[in-house]
Image 1 (cartoon, rainbow, N blue to C red):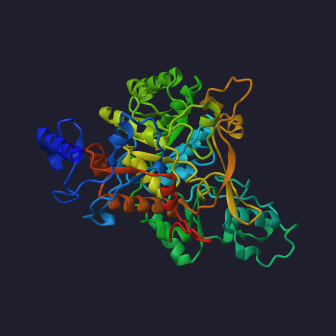
Image 2: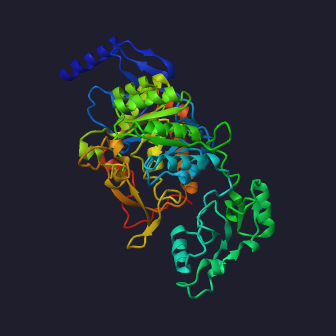
Length: 549
């Protein structure tokens, strides 16, 4: 009897509910809850699995901060090829990237070499601020002067270098030929070239100097400055030489063209360029009064975007700096941060930023959450700020917490316009620093947080409001990361991984991904710790991971 009464009450509730079928087969019941049936990805009675981002992050019962690993995205319907996927997205209100990757302004990640490589691959590099104004300006100008195919900053050596020292340099750099100049630096008089062929059969390497075995200037094939790249390439082909020095009429070295680079000339159709066909580059600054002079110098050097670098971006110092830049250089694109709450984002938007950097205490080398008990889980931070900032057309950069293409995709799924990478790009050939080997023979590069004591001693303590502190409290660590090869192989791997992810989700573009996110069509599921283990490599005695081929 009890069971019959319960069934009757159930039928009564169904009769009383007022059902309206809206766009995409969405049924809206009387209690204003949305239940998704049918729609573009299924038949008229096929339900959507999982939950919308709004349900997960804004549900009344939610009191939890979520990371990228806590989430998995439900697959969508595929009706396009992976090469049809468009990854174009906005870094700021006016700067669009074909590859939504930004290299972090860390002193072990981004200087001119990294910024050039990332820009060629469709992203953008941000030159760190842990150097003098003059040095930072020079790094920016190297990027703006870059011409594809010309090596503008080759490693030069002096004629007095011993062959034993040359051997050490070769092992460190990974290549064997070097220009020999009068004072061992770029821009001075070229004396010759030294290659492996010049030194192979010299036995007394501890006393023999480079000047006695190098190929002298008189025997070199050179090209005068200025020279067009196709002309330089023709000279290399005809002379069958490995390197072609570009010299002024006074014999000073200004560039080098390598035979190994000949096949690379047409390999960068996605390069991020300005209206003058120069690569785009950003630079970081602090919030000290002296940084106003840095802003002026960087603007004069042609920097395209300025990032105000702070671990906690909601400060009066940053707001004043944003207003100063917008007054002093009205056309300059300015990115504020770092922030993790909507109220913080509101203050930056009110001050006039063109982009917002999101993330606090979630980088692999960052200890801010541990030391200061402040921050937020990255997936939650990105979702909430991106949703708020889109009302004002301000793009969001997801900064930190990314270690794979899948996490890049998740950041975009939550509304970010681009993803800033630190540890992911550290260890590449283009990152600052020299390689060294661990005891087990693994090739490594040093990588440190800007909140580590080593970095703070060089000036980054301003980022943590510790310039005048008697005791400097570290908010980061220093360590090492494994060699990842060249950015020109690693970023294409990230980009193709992102395209495969978007194809599986059924989104042919970042704009489509965002539309699905905010219309509730992009579905997510929370993962248990067991599900996270299941989603990775498991059940093997041993395995070897190769990222790309």
